[in-house]
Length: 272
Image (tube, rainbow, N blue to C red):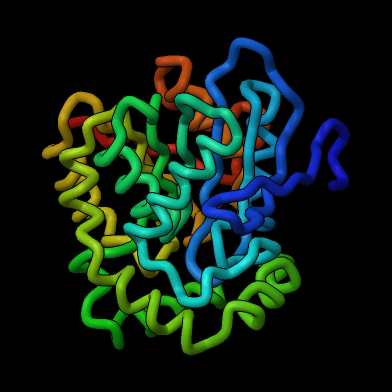
């Protein structure tokens, strides 16, 4: 781990090793756990995780079957990954955490929040994929291809080994499950404080008009915001803006643009 104070460890979940990156310990804090998307490891989440590591003890795991974690003999679906994440929290000794999920990590975090709300202090959904806007599968695959050209080129060397390791057949199977996941319905009914963040250049997210409609339907404990200029993997491409936005939300402050990075992205908040 390049960052000072970070550690790499392996813990057992159901007798199988799970690889976890852990930031510096912040006593008395509610831990933040970053959850990656489909077919990739947690490596691309580190820019945002690092930017938030001063706030709380931070964990960036590779879920079972991804990256440097052992596989379980078959591809785990979203519900099984949520169960494995809960088991991982137990193995890490984390009683309650803020979950920050990107792409498929969003549905995984939503499943955890719905099944064990007492374990979740809050959920951040960065580009939460799944639902009607990503259906049918052929449409979602086209959206994914369009997004690839909008991402930061430096991310290729981070995620390409993960995709090759995971395999195209496993990726296609899980992506099919992801696009059928009712992310919007689960998000509107989440039992814990939730922040949903979309990028205005993300083809997998609904258009701004639809996002504003959802914002007007949002219950009081759900905040919806957008980062201008971000595509799907905002945790890698826009870590400063995303971390600043999350920090505002965690502190209960008004969400504003990042004062340290003017002109890179504009934060828009949609209120119900």
